[in-house]
Length: 577
Image 1 (cartoon, rainbow, N blue to C red):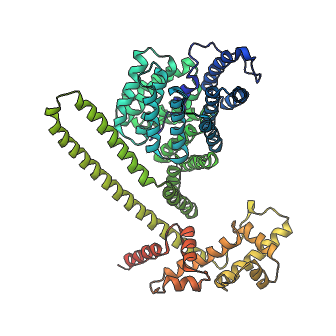
Image 2: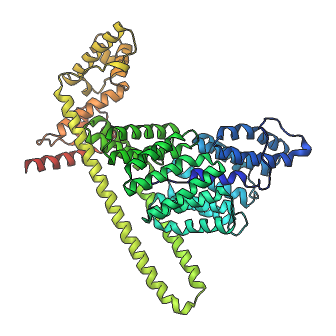
Image 3: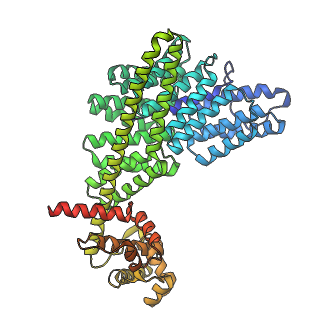
């Protein structure tokens, strides 16, 4: 089970320059008088901090915009960039990808390369979170966090150092890499040695709980999450409530305390009004897996569907492949073939888009580089003559191990991809056979019918005639097929034909034609005697070119025509044996 504390660590940057400020009065949109400008900006930073702790991100955007406009008018670049980054940070919580990008672009235009280490670190933090949420690129996110940490390391800004260490820990935790324990311990030591406030102690406690959970020390992990809850409730860190309950639930689930775990997952969902969307998605995922493991598959599927809906609505891809993976497997087990096929297709396409394997390999390379640099620094402080030989041995062994692990990982992904293609091929083949066994495709009932009763009846009858013309007359094989030729063949008009297809097939005309063409191609290719060249098959089905056929086949089934033929052929041979 994976989760992250990015939703908390980003808070530290709301108060970069607000130390020592008193709590602000009620927020207004009034611009201060010129002689009190710097005082009001200091007060604004204090209000940012409190609004973040209360999870009031829209409030931050609303209160900051007037100050941004005034800073631009005054040509106060540093304050303007601070305002821009604070608004971008608030949109990170809301997961409004386009707005985050817009405000980051504006800050980049104003940046003259002299904004200082604090704002530079804040920018690195936001970019790291943006990269994870919307690009699912952990290696680049880790680079941003390490860069930001180096900007403020060695300063007396311990709060933000702890924040960066927490984000670094979250990367290692997501990858189930126990090497993150070093950073967690560093954060905990900073929080205690420097006598930090409850907020930083809460962050450090969560970091320790995460990494101890990874290393299997569940009892110690439970102790740290209890501390995190104490600090969160004491300081009113509402944004942390759901996350802390979620971690506690995961620990209890690992220990086999099913009743306690179920209660804690439910408690985590009660605080969704304060939680950022990323934490809400994690709750859906973890609670869904728990329900699945305890036999409540119906509830698990409901949670997965809520999670994938939230992912698409927020344009957050970080957890999307996990939701699709579990939906595909669970739907397949329940016999819900169409949903399983849809989730499987989305899963394959998402992994291709994100170049998941390449990014994971990049992450491993970055870890290797970082570890090597740390090792080199240690050697410089010792007897170089004695340790040079050992360095070569350790480096060779380490690199060899990484190479072996990387090769095994690539092999695992390759085998997994092949299994996924096999599943897609067989599911689509079963789907085609089921459709072909029906005399005529039936018009759906219910929500798809939105017209009058007479109009629905007419559309349903027309759709049956269209389906009959496709299945029995193979009208889709005409190269010059169009809405006009189809409507002429049915002695009706194009508007009625288009409306019937859109209403009952839930797709446009050309996708509908391609669907029938590909189903026919899949049916023919499933025959043991099939030996027609794919170029000839494409022509017979009405495609203008073989490349158009390949593209349509891949889009419809999720794998190439050649791969589909190979998997189906292998399946038939196994059945024959």
